[in-house]
Image (cartoon, rainbow, N blue to C red; front, side, top):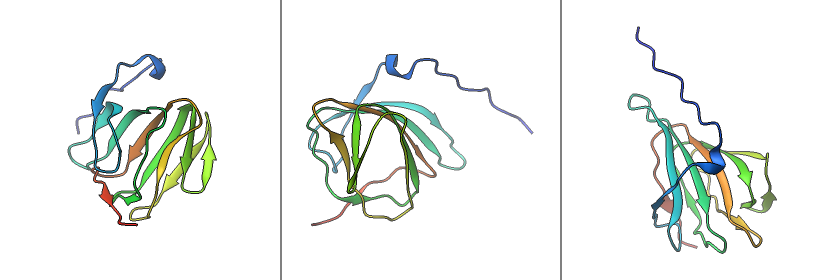
Length: 121
């Protein structure tokens, strides 16, 4: 059995982010891939939501977990801040967006390949 090498990122707030766009956002977000497993489909990302980003109600077929590093994040009807954790089961209707006057930096860990399915409101 062959094992991979550990992935270590010492300062996530200093990681340079690329840009990404999804149908669930009203504009581009900052994104950096931390890890992808081609066998299981597991994907880990560092994401920065810009201040004022609007998001649509949506769902993913894979469960996912969010760890907030900076700023505040509205997750459905709750606001969480740095050091907070939330987990969404696969298929759950959700909305997550930055809250307040700042951007929000977080790690998101998908249990499978990422897809985003907008839900008509």
